[in-house]
Length: 354
Length: 272
Image (cartoon, rainbow over all chains, first blue to last red; front, side):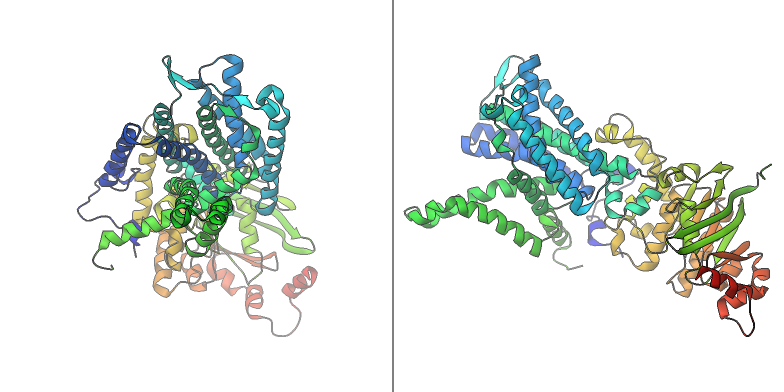
C-alpha cells in the first residue's frame, strides 16, 4: 500500500521520531545540500560577473517566490499583487535606511516586517473571499501600491526613484557582486530553512489543511480567517525581504519595476516549480531566471548575423515564458519538484520497477 | 438543576433552509459514556443535527449545551477546545497530506507552537512539542492499525482506509464526545466489523462518548446503548435499541404504511 514516496532507501533505519522528522529525507540528501551551499560559497572566487549576477537574481527572486508559494501553493489562496509587496520591501528598506540612518543590515529584516504589516492589512479582506473575487482583490492591492509608489514622493522619491545605500557589515561595504552574493546566499539559506520549518509544524499544517478541505479544517480547530490572513502576512514578509535585497543590490529603486508583469512572473515561478513545494519555489525561480538567458544564447547560436532574429529577441524571451507556462500546465502541472521526485524514486528502485 | 451525568443536551432545535424544515423541535440528551445512535431514512435530518452540534449550521431556535455550556453562537473551530470531535459522511481528509500529517492536524488545538517558534524549529521547543505529540499520534495509529500507511498520501488510499484515517484524525483531537457520521458506509462486512470494534474500544477503553449516525441496522442494534429515530426532521422515537425497533412509528417511517392514517404522514404533510 505504501507509495514510493514513503518507501525508505535500503540500509536506512530510523529508530526514533526525531530521525523521522528531519528536513532532508536521508542523511545523504542533507550532506548534498550542505556541500552545495559550500560550493556556492566558492562561486565568487571563480565565477564571472555575469554568472554572479544571475545567481543573485535567483536568490532574491527565489525568496519572494517561496513567499508566494506559501500563500498560493500551501494555503490555496491566489495573489496577483506579489510584485507590489516585493517593491514595497525595496522602498521600505531604502526609506528606513535614508530617514533613520539604521544600518542596511537591520533595514532588510525591518523592511520585511513593514511589508508583512501591509500584507496582513491586505489579508483582512482577502481572508473572507475566495477564487476569482480574491484574484481581483489582490489585483487591486497591486494597483493601489503601484499608484502609491508613483505618488508618495516622501517614501519612494516619486518618479525619480529612491537611492538605496549599499549593504555594509562592520564598516566593510559589500557593494560588489562578489561580496553581495554572500549576503543573498545567507538570506536564501535562512529564509528557506525557516520556511521548511514553518511548514512541518503546527501553523504550516494548518495552511495546508485550509487549502485541502477548509470545512473539516475548521472542525479540527483551525481558525480559517486567522490562517488566511497570516499566510498573506508571511508571504509579504518573504516578498519584502526579497525586495529589500533587490533594492540594495541595484542601489536604486524605481516604481516601474514592480508591475503586474512581475507578479505574473512570480506566479509562473511557483507554478513551474511546483505549487506546495519549498524546493519547487527555488527550481521554478532558477528556471524563470535562466530561460531568457538560454533563449538569448540560443538566438546567438542559431544566427548571430541574422538581424531579424536578433531584433526579435525581446519578443522571443517573452513568448518563451508564456510557452513554458502553457507546456508545464499541460505536461507537468505539479511542476519541476514533482518531476524531481519521480526521478529520485526511479533511481531508488533501479533497476527494478517496484 | 442540570444532571452532571448528561454530557450533551439538545433542546428544541429547529433548523430551516428557506422553506425547507430540516429539523423541527428536536430534543435529546446524551449521557457520559454512551454510544448514542441517530437513525432515520434519507433526508431525515441526521447530518443536519450533527452539523448543528459541531457548529457547521446555526439552528434557528433551541439550545445545545455541552458539559453545561451553551454552544449556540460558538464558532466551529472553538468547539474542539471544549472536547467535540467529528468525522464526515463524505470523506473530508486533507488529500495531499500524508496520513501522519492529517492526524497531526487533529492535534492542532493541543499544540502551542506557532509560526514564530515553528520557523526556528530547533531553538524554542517546537521540536520537542512536535515529537511529544508525534508519539501520542503513534498510539492512535497503532490502535487503528494504520501503521503501514503512515507516510502514504491520504488521497491515494482506498475508501475503507480513508474512513479509518478520518476516525484517527478525530480521535487525535482527544474529544470527550465524538460524532461519527456514517462510519461504516460503503464498507464490506469485514471492514464493518473492524470499525464496530474500534467504536466500542473508543467508548470503553478511551472513555469517549459516541454519537453515531449509521444506516446498518445490524451494527446499530448491536453496539448502541440508546437510539434516536428522526423522520422528516422530527424525532419519532428514542430509547433502547429493542424498544425502538418494536416502535410502530419507526416501522412506518422505514417501511411505509399499510392502510389508515399515521402520525408520521401527518408530520410529513406539515413539512411539505
